[in-house]
Amino acid sequence: MTVGRRSWNVEAAGRHEGEIELRTYGNGHYLGRFILTPGPGPGPVPPLQARLVAVSPADQAGAALASAGPVRNG
Image (cartoon, rainbow, N blue to C red; front, side, top):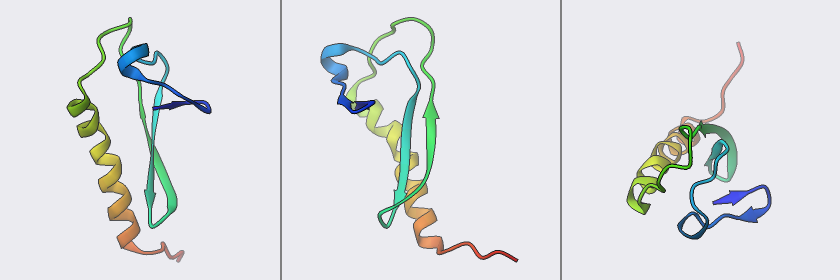
């Protein structure tokens, strides 16, 4: 995970307290983002498998939007 411009090792440093932004890309273009807001308190770090599952919708949305082609106005 990256916080600002620095790497954040959740296994060593624990869960980040602020919002987490998952950016969505398709064909090398930024298409949007998902914002994850953690619950209150320090809480446990979810296992790696659960974190990978949480990222899947962003990957799928990027692939779907990239294959849809450009949006036409009017």
